[in-house]
Length: 416
Image 1 (tube, helix red, strand yellow):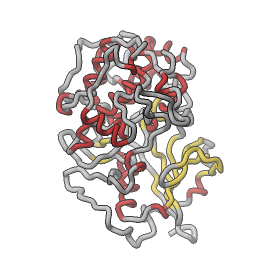
Image 2 (tube, helix red, strand yellow; image 1 turned 135 degrees about the vertical axis):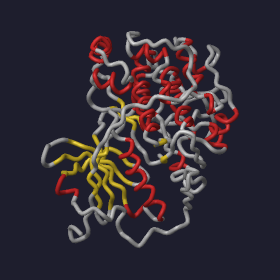
Image 3 (cartoon, rainbow, N blue to C red; image 1 turned 60 degrees about the vertical axis):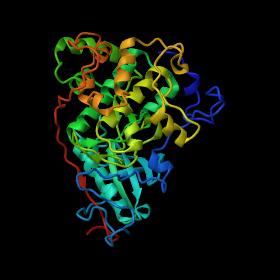
Image 4 (tube, helix red, strand yellow; image 1 turned 45 degrees about the vertical axis):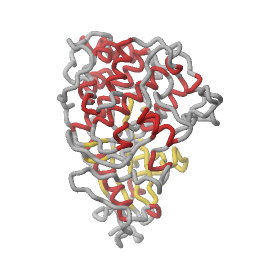
C-alpha cells in the first residue's frame, strides 16, 4: 500500500489545501452526496425512468393513503429492539442499530420519515428502492434487506449490519491501495454489479461511500464463488485463504444504497442525470445511457483505489461535470494523481477500458471479472485465464439467488 496522496489526506475534513496548481479546492475533501441530494430542485435525478414505459413526473401530490406498503400489518418493536444511537443520517431519515428479539442478531434499520414523502413519486421511489434491492439480493457482495416495517411516521428498512465503515473512509485511512488489495476489493464490487445487471438492475450511484465494509472478513469460499463462480477448486481456495487471513483489517464489501437504482436490462437505456458528479459517465450527463454507465463508475473507483485521486476535477459540481464530458483520462507518469504510484500497465489498461468514452466499447461488468490483472492479483495467479486486454463482448451471468422479505406496517392503534 502506498502513502496517502495529498489529494486524499483530507477527505472527510475541512476544505483541501492547494490540491491543484490553481489553488482551487478539489471538491473531494469531504464525502460527496448523490447528485440528487446536492442539486435537488435543479435536476430530477431520483427517478429518471427507463425508456420502456416509466414516464414519471415530479408534479403529482402524494396519494391519500397514509401507507407506502398498505399490505403490511406488523410492528417493528415486536421483533426488533432499537438502539438509540444514530449510525448515520441522510436526506430522508436516520440509520440505527437494532437487535432481533428472538435471535439476538444485530441489524441496521434505516428509518425513512414519511413527512419527507411529499409527492406521489417520492412514495414510488421508496417502493422502487425496496423492490430493486429485493430483486438484486442473493449475492454476498450486496447488502441484504431482511424486512420492511411501516408505522404512522416512518418506513423502516431492516438490513444486514455493515459496521466496518465504508470504502471512502478506508481510502482516507489507508491512502493508495496496493494492486493486490485493490484487486481484492474491486473484484467483489464488480461481481456485485455484474449480478445486479444480470437481474435487470442498474445501480446508478456506485461510489466508495456506497460500498460498505462488513465487520468480518469474507470467507475464502465466498470470495471464490462470488467473484469467479467458474473457479472454485480446493487449490484456488488455498491460494486465496492466506492473503485474507493475513489481513485482519480486511473486510468483505457490500454494495448498498439502491435509492437511485432503476430496472434496466442489457440494451435498454434511460435518461436524466443520476449519481454523484465524480462518478457519472459522460453519457449520463449528456443524454441516453444504459448499464455501461455503471462500468464507468467502477473505473473511477479503481482509479481512486490505485492513485488516491479521482480522474476528473473541477472547482465545483458543474466544473467536475464539464471535466468528465470534455476532459482526457491521463494515466501517465506525468499526471499528478499517479506521481509516485507504482501501478502496472495492466492495471492502467483495465482502468482505461472502463473509462472508454464510447459506452459500446466498454466491457460488461461480467467481462471485467475475467481480466488477467484481476485474476492475477485477486487470486495469486492460480486461476489465470487465457485472456488478453479488455474483452468488449457481453456474456456470463453470475449465479442467481433467492430471498424472502417480510413487509409490514402498523396503524395508530397497533395494526390494521
